Length: 280
Image 1 (cartoon, rainbow, N blue to C red):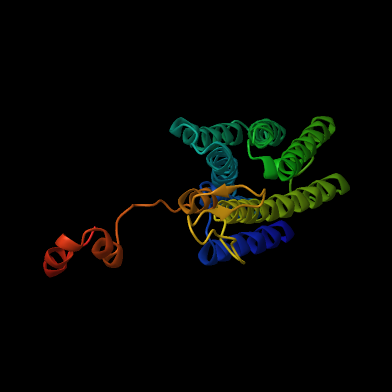
Image 2 (image 1 turned 180 degrees about the vertical axis):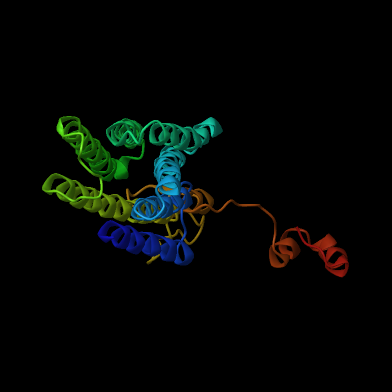
């Protein structure tokens, strides 16, 4: 219940964030994955009351959670989704979980199967984070990869603990090792959920700074020649006004002629053009 409460708070925060701010590809998959994680733990709580539905739903939602996390990370880091065939893995996981349950409720085998499956997806997510090509996000991406690896370590220790446990051990009798495991997993869930928000915010900030850097505004006093209208730049060179403005903004020039200059240069045609209402 503590993990459900923690995941719910982070998921609601992420969903509220998505309503208020711009999000990037993959963010919605992260939110959906966190929601599936909540449903997976609720399915485990259901086990004492309805064992068979609990096994099916827990395997389905917990595996769907890591698939969505992997898809969201691939979309965010590389801008492309994973193959759709990956979404068949939760169905396969549910079927295997049902088979182990009907085969004599092999609890130890079910725990080890989930350990291997979820750890494999966490390793794939860590690999994607380490491949993040964005310069400003590499440190945060490495931290995300570290927490994914921490999840793998926690799952592996739990798997070894179950291998050494007596056959009569129950999943719903909370011993010290299980308590520590769920505490660590809850902390990792909170960290990764927070990192998703920070990743999105950092990327938005980086794009804003990049856009601001490209938009170089002309401010202050510009030294301009009173005759040829060339402008003196910061290095003391005199350049045409068109070139000066073009190099400092995104503006482009289209040359024409104002009515006053047209009358001065072409007085014989000015009246006719003016009556037409068109000047170059």
